[in-house]
Image: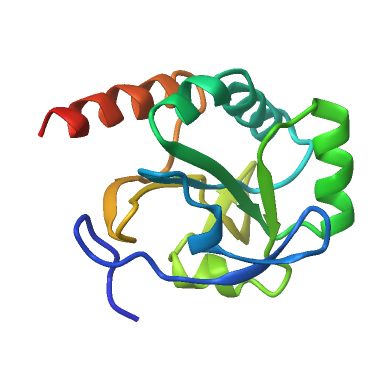
Length: 159
C-alpha cells in the first residue's frame, strides 16, 4: 500500500451504509468532493460530539459543494441506532471487516489507560471531486474540527 498524501488518489471503496445498501465512495461525493471522516465507535462521548458537530454544520458544508461521510467498524444496525438517537443527517459506512480502515491507514495500535489495543485513529480526509486528496487531518481533535475543515475549504476555493 502506498502512503496517502495530499495530491494522491483517495482509495475507492464500496461499503454498506446505515440502511444496509452497497454504496461507492464516488456515489457519495458532493459536487466539489467529500469530507470522509473515520471515528472509533458509535455512541461514545468523543464520537458523538464529533458526529453532532458535523450534523449541526452539515448545511454549511453542503453549501461548499462537499458531502459528509463517516466510517467506523460498527455494524449497520449500530449505525442505524446512532443516526436515530443523534438525528444525524449524513451517511455512515459500516466497515466491519476493516478493509476501508486499512486502505486509509487509520487502523493502529492505541494506548488508553495503560492498555494497548488496535483501533481507529480519528482521521478526516478532504477529497476533491476528482478523487484526489486535498487535505488529511491525522489524529483529529474533535473541538473546532468542523470549523477547521470549513476554513480549509474556503482557502482551497481561493487557489
